[in-house]
Length: 180
Image (cartoon, rainbow, N blue to C red; front, side, top):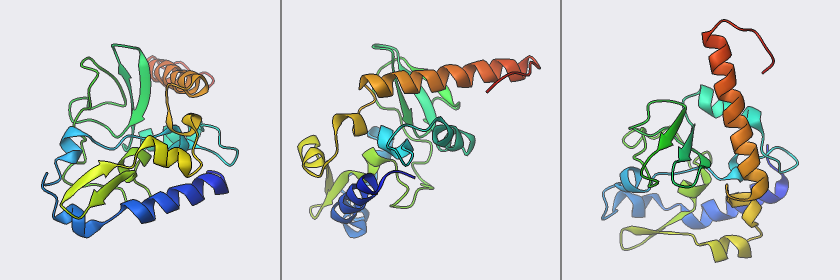
């Protein structure tokens, strides 16, 4: 579980963002899941000390609720719900753009569990939505480290997790027992 700071900020953003009536009247007819699906922020996987927990990422992968994908253009890895076109836990996104979410028509996430960058879209009365905005997130007390996979600490952590995951899959496939 993340620190009290992160839990408080996340709850404030959810209270300010979630508006099911506006979502139901969306002019996009829920195409956001197809064109700009939720993605996790590092803070979605924080432990009590606001450090990325490999165990939390692995749990989401094991449940089929997350994948680690690499944007081939800049070698950045991010955690995201599994994409329709990937069908696997770790994959390369050749285009570098967002990929449709596999859960587009049957979202398993409650408002509280929704990946941060899905929860931080704010529904507006005209039937559209807007990203909460980085300035507003920072004003609430979040830091670039909390939300950016590009931050050096997060970049290293997600790559280490992906490397270990791939190594363990290869070991398992070849019947090799070893450290996880």
